[in-house]
Image (cartoon, rainbow, N blue to C red; front, side, top):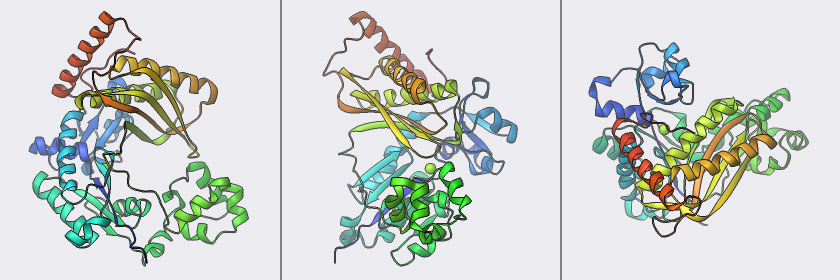
Length: 386
Ligand SMILES: [Mg+2]
């Protein structure tokens, strides 16, 4: 028999807010919200668990968050600081496996199948990672362990915060069955509603449903979803070295149709991704927008430059075009928006012709000044004009 894979999903608890509390111990135990300015239609990027008790959650408009929790301490996003912690977390992962797939600054999949001979069971490795993150960095991670990515991610979320859940081949169906169908990747609000109208609320009901009923609701997604329902997921962990893109995406708490809000979110993502490219001394040739509708249909829209770049304005000009084109043709309520770049190479190896040389130099100086200010005062200290 082939040895089944052992996947660990690590997800930091209230990551940005926890880093702020580490940097300023006065904030410990207080409701801390990290995000954009409430007066500028900013959104919540992270909230401490104390703030979450008031109903505050990420992607909520900040104005709403401060109404729900008037005593909250609202802090600007300091992406560079979180990236530093993220690197240290990754250094801990690397002690146990090179097979690491980062999902965001605070979340990653690890394939530890090959590490078990050296370190003992996946459970031991997961426990060691969790302990080291707490001891070395003073941060709390939730850990999920399973034989595939879907179950590992589900596991890390089951007992948050400070969770540690192992899903095995033996207990997986027992854990999956009572959960709501919305826990399945690929089932959005519309699909959920359609399933509910047929009396299908839980994963068990979905598993036992008539195939014709499922097909009428899920269409050609049916086989994929039926695999997940049984805890089967064959996607591989794609390690860092193979990763050829940098991206930023946001799942909204409620679906968003407002064009201006979406453009705001996108601009933020473009700025973050461009800054991360520059921090890593990289340039990219292709931009990709990822758009997920309320029914979980996901589309991507890409555009490739003649020459790679890491200039925010060049990315933004193209990203906005691509977005507006999409909006004109196929606008709809989105539950997720993302921006990513690919075709990465070391900075300075190509030249860009969209701008004249003096204009390009000016943009580069702007980016440099921008990075400095953002690193010092927070990412929202400076927002450039669109
Ligand atoms: Mg997290």
